[in-house]
Image 1 (cartoon, rainbow, N blue to C red):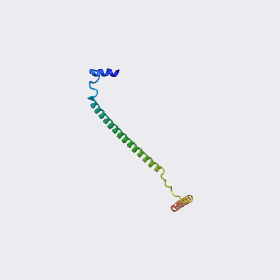
Image 2: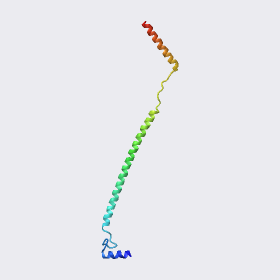
Image 3: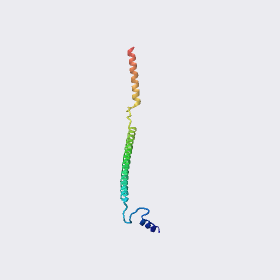
Image 4: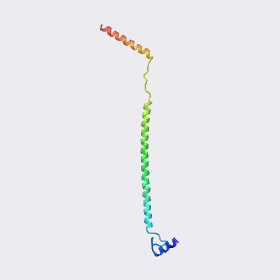
Length: 113
C-alpha cells in the first residue's frame, strides 16, 4: 500500500526527486566524489597518525635503551673489583717497621746529644 502511494506521488512529481526510476541521481556523483575524498583524507590522516605513533614508539624505545645502558654502566661500576693491597705477613712486617722506626728515632736522639 505504501509503495502505491509513493508511486502515485512520484508520477505527480510530488515529494522527493523528480527523476524517473532508472535515471541516476545527479548529485550522486558529487556525493560519491566527496565521500571518496573524505575516505582518502581519512586514510591520509590515519597514516599520519600511525607514522606519529611509530615515531613516538621509536623515541620511547631510544629512551628505554639509553636508561638501560646507564643502569648497565652503573651496575658494572658497582661490581668492578676493588684492588686490595697485598700484605706480606702483616704482623711481622708491622713489628719490623715499628722497631725500625724506634731504632731510627733513638739513633737521631743520640746523634743530637
